[in-house]
Length: 114
Image (tube, rainbow, N blue to C red):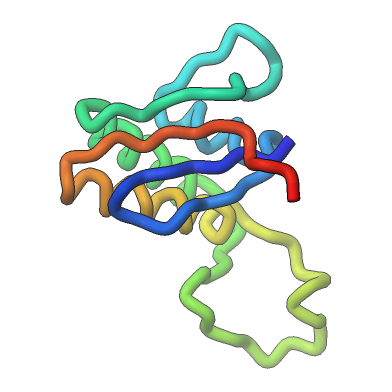
C-alpha cells in the first residue's frame, strides 16, 4: 500500500507502507498490527520527538547515501544502488521540519489510486 503524508507547509510525500513503518516507529508511533494504520497523525506537539527519533534512525544506518543529489563516479547505475535510510527518510523529515516551523500537524492516509 502507498501512504500519502500531508502537511499544509510542504509538498505531499508518497512512501510504501513497508518503508514508512520503521520511520514512523522511530518517530515514536506504536502500532498494534504488523502494518501501518491507514490513517494517522503526528501532532505539532510530537514533532520535536519525531524528528529526533528519525534523525537517530538515520544516524544508526550503516549506509551513507546522500539525498542532496551528489553523484559519485561509480560504475554502478544509480537505479541499481540500494536505498539507505537517509535517502528514504529525507522527504518526510523535511516535511516534519517545515511543519514544526509553521506549527502544523502531519497526517497520513492511503494514497489515491491513479
